[in-house]
Length: 162
Image (tube, rainbow, N blue to C red; front, side):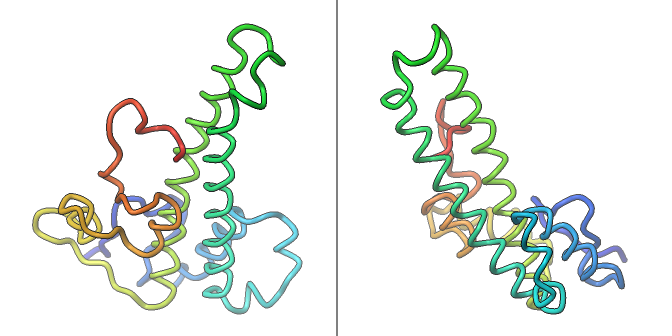
């Protein structure tokens, strides 16, 4: 039976029960963090440490994108040609969504590196049910998306970094 991979699992990272999992996870995580992290052998030797660093890095990127989105009109208003601020806000929405998806994937890979086994659940994954029931999002998602889970985004602001 093939290993179950939860929604949001990054492409290119092999399933946790495969021989290639750890190597593909390290390679993918090193692509998430700044390039200079590759200089530190300890991160290759201890993938769980790399996953923690990646989680903190991507959470900071999400916070930065949200702050940039909130302040773009004030900081850039009158300094860009017509439509420029709206174009910058669209970049923040697009990249903010990508960063949030990456944060979820980093969380999943980190959990798998720590030995968590993912199993399909009736009625969706445990993470999806938490979001639908209004409960707290998984620990790794709270830092990236506040208290809302992946299904908790609403209306026109769904793609906007918060």
